[in-house]
Length: 125
View (cartoon, rainbow, N blue to C red):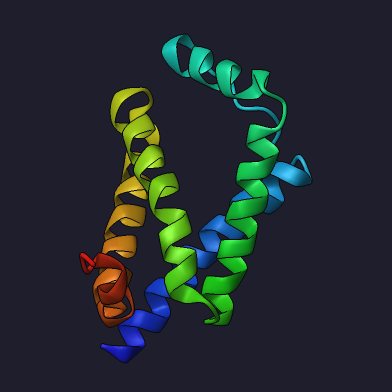
């Protein structure tokens, strides 16, 4: 289980690091978006701060996952991002659905592995 945890943690971290680096270095060019997905990204991009903030957050959390430092915090911060990635690919662009499913499963698996760290957060006071 420990080896699986390390592998999943590093793969998930590398995905977020690669996505962030590709965004900031403009690798791969601009994807051709159509329909509702184009409208969605135009709305996010209109704020001018959100996408760069999101990518910096993904980069920092990805580095934390790869380094194995602050992993529970990184998982908490990444959870709404992973859910949004999944929902975007479920409803707007099915091409990225396998990767989105991997992220949901990886985040869920790591959440289970670090459950003891999360228990204090889940207790009603």
